[in-house]
Image 1 (cartoon, rainbow, N blue to C red):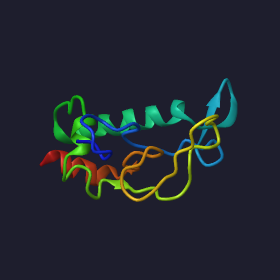
Image 2: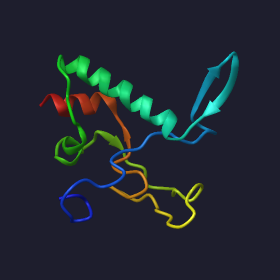
Image 3: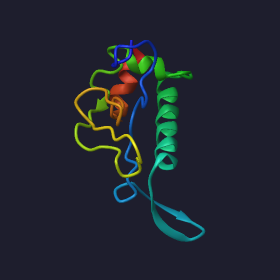
Length: 120
């Protein structure tokens, strides 16, 4: 069951800092600039999963179902409880709240805790 009481995953599963104002400074063709959005957060998560794989000594595989099983979702994320996705949403706006929500999923990762939970 997902947090909405239905079978399957919730969307989104997780979050990351995607705000270009607080996101990542990158260099492209010698010019620096701020970057955000999924294009910044997806590689961040990919790098984290590569480190998890290294720590486990094997590939974790499809991690999404594991995110919904305790203890994997307990203390493994910074729960985001304020804000919404209104900056780019033209119709529906979802608000962050305690626990899983349709704006930030479980929240942003706590890498060491996530590795520990997935090692169990």
